[in-house]
Structure formats: structure tokens, C-alpha cells
Image (tube, rainbow, N blue to C red):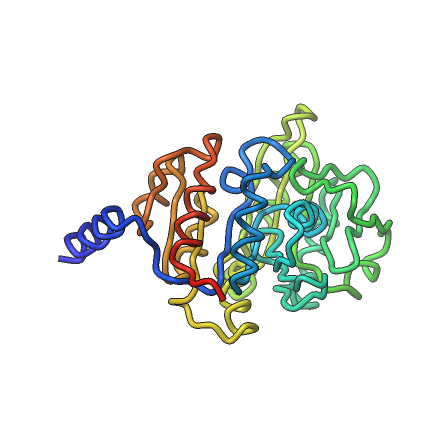
Length: 296
């Protein structure tokens, strides 16, 4: 029955070619707002400005750090909320930090103490910038040159700050040993964490490990933003293309997936664009939202 209702709902919107009026638009960046380029297309920028002029709040959400996302909003010349590091931070259009999902001092101490037993280097993402040990290798999508770099040598250099994301790098043997040690932490500590590990594409033989709080995702940040603005879930429209947008979809009232989005996300969407990201499917979304938003 639920699937039948969803199919009926989707067909209704496809036939009417309209969206429900939304007061908050939260858009993913890479693979949605942008398709491999760094410059926001003129047509997309104009549509974002038109929506803002009609009172729609705009938020950009990405795994990127804040400065990189804010630069895209500046291209559109709109004040935009920024959800960065996949939901670990929420910044206001003025650049003020409004929400951060950080490690507790006790948990951070436990993790870094564990790391000290292995030849791994690490960096901590904080509101002030990246605190890092020497020789740490940071994944390219997080390596934002606009972020301040703060050398860290002592444990206290890290514990005195609000850390939302930890990146570790080292040889495969040492990184795997570190991963196993993290997996052996007490259950109450381990359950708070989300961990991912990949092989470095630019440094053969180097394994990269990321640790964040388990609930540090776009959905949590979206709910924090809705609370900041005093808006209900139903007044929010989300647009995305990948699995990290699933929590965002759960937090929003109307969900749009790009035509080339992963199947799992398309199955959760109320609407799927006809055009891909490279074909400017986002413009299709913005035009329909603009159509449903009354002029002031």
C-alpha cells in the first residue's frame, strides 16, 4: 500500500509539473549543483537569486569544508547557509558557526591515545581550521587551501579545541592496526563513531582513515537549520545525488534526486529530474520551485 501511494504521489507531481511551495531549499553541491566544474553556471546562479528574492532560504550541503562551499554561494551572490563536512558544521550566511557535532574531550583523548601506539599521522578539523601533525595526508576533497593550518605536536593542542572530524594516514599495516584498535574500544565509545577507510590515490601504500561522530550527517544539520529558522520539515525541499544525501532526505518534506543519482536515493525521492547533473538538472528543479513560489 505504501509503495502504491508513493507511486501515485510521484505521478501526480510529474503530471502537474509543480512542486509544493517550500521556504527552505537544501542542495547538495557536487553531482547536483555542480557537475565536475568549480564555476557555478550563470543560469543556476540567476535561478538561485530569483528564489532568494521570493523569500526562499538557500542552504548548500557538502562533504567539502566551509570555505570551498561558501565560495560557490558567493558566485551566486546570495546569502546561503552552509552545511559542511557532510553535516558536522552549520554556518549562517554571515559565516557564524551555528551548529557543530564535536567529539567529547574524553572520546577524543581515547582515540588519540590509541593512535599514539601506531605510526599514523593525523589532522583534526575544528572551527579555527585544521590542527595537524607533520606528514599527515588529507583526502583531496577535504584539502581546502582556504582553511587555516595549525601545527599540532602535543595532545593538548588537539584536546583544547572543538574537533568534528579526524583524518589519519599511514602505511597499510599501521592504519589497519589502528582501525582494529578503534574497533576494540568500549562499546559506548565505539557506538558514537562513524569510521571510513580508503587507500590513497596519490600516495600508493598509504591508507586514509576518517572518524566522525555517528550522527554527524546532513540530516542532523538540516534539522538544526530548520530549528534555527523555525521551519517545519514539510517546508523544506532537498536535492541530492548520492548516499550521503539519504539522511538529508529523511529530514526534509520533499525530496528530489538527480536523474543520474544512485538508485538507493532515487527510490527515496518524491521527484527525479529528467536531466542529469551535467545537463543542468538542478535548473529544472529550481524552475519548478520558482513556479510554485508566489512573488512578493
